[in-house]
Image (cartoon, rainbow, N blue to C red; front, side):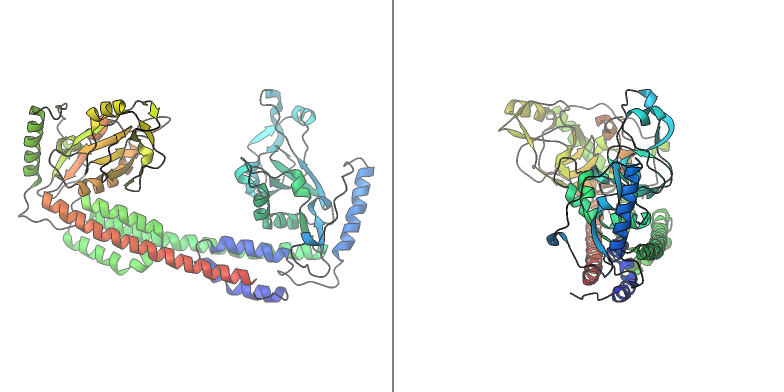
Length: 567
């Protein structure tokens, strides 16, 4: 490890790596953390031997505290325990002192007036909740309270400049500073500093300590830190003049971080715009030469366009959209058209009904011209899903669960194209038989979640028998006609549209009727297989792109971490 002998050494190393922070995914966030860490170690600005040392500040604080107690403005605080040598995490510069937070100001937590009493709310007094602390500079609040609440509910009116810290839950360790007089709820602790402590220095000090407070609050059902934990935490206290210099330097460096974030956002937006424009041109191309030139542009600029995972995700979606529009592979006039495939399916469906193996379904309505979203290539057909497939669903009731029996698959067991039997419940043979009469699952069938997280299509590859609940089942009248991987890719593409059109106020869902009537672009069978092969090939490319991005960002992060570890 490189020892930082003074602030100049630390700042030289920090200056070198602003660009490196720009490249790493969370580099700017880590840079902000490093700036605060250096500040609180006395390495961000040089020390001045002419500064009044912090031990003199502590004498002034003690005298001020005594005056305030005598004047009845504050209560006599309990004595703070001495700081033991083993509590000190690092050596401070000359003129600094280790103190407990309780010595540099008076700390008060708030309360929540009874919601049952409407006379407590809607007044003129701001009331800060823990989620509002992360604003930083707090100039307004969502709710206000009345003078009656202030007088009756053990609330403190904290002055402008009071520093707030959130103590509970997801907001633990967030800090802010009041630009208005305000009260707080019980999840916020407010510190009014003594005159020898710079309020903005305390704000930055507490920001630098957020990881410590989060660690202190871990372990409970709801993470929390108490006022007692806060005031007993030891912190470094610089001379008053140095506190001002630290605040000015932190502000300057944080402004540079803001500029970096703005530059990164602009850079990412330009890349996203170029990517979006290229994909839109692909999807709307009406001539082969336009399509070819745009695809050539994308392939030639992979390195720039696909250096972020979000763009790769968009590319995956575009590949599927091109596939179902008939633009991913060329058509072959020798392919048997989809209309002939539909005739084969209709004959087989009729035979299965006659043999009593399946029940006849309600007739499907004709497809109207205004329903068709785009024109298909020659040889393709628009059909409703239930015309090409046997679309069923599982039970919507909740059977009685047993310890040993048949697995009951629900939407939560469909994830990333896989069927998971983790966290599964079991039902009796009797219930399984009853559900299977309605929707028996076989190898090669496709499952599709109908409720909650709609979609997540899965091709059944296991031989184990199971039942399904709130899950759609796509079965084939003729095995693999249409190609089940083509159907899987189509459902993967269509699921976003289905989610947008889903019903349900509490939990979204799609009905069996909706799925049966959903429009399905059916290519010739031979072309379906060419499409699947091409998608497979391009998805491997997307996997490689994501791996490259992961490896590159991992290296950038590791390099930045190594640099920061030196400081």
